[in-house]
Image (cartoon, rainbow, N blue to C red):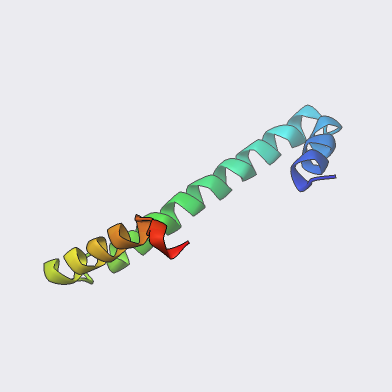
Length: 71
């Protein structure tokens, strides 16, 4: 059984007040995750110069191309 399925089964048998607590907890987890992502973005923003960012973007573009002769 997948973890999500096990969680749903357990939620189904909770009394309504406990279900509200579970929903609030899940909501807090989502908010914390969102806040952590924003903080990571803020912490790394401006870490690259424009030239470094351009080089990085070019390298990503090069990786996305398929060299058919390489097959």
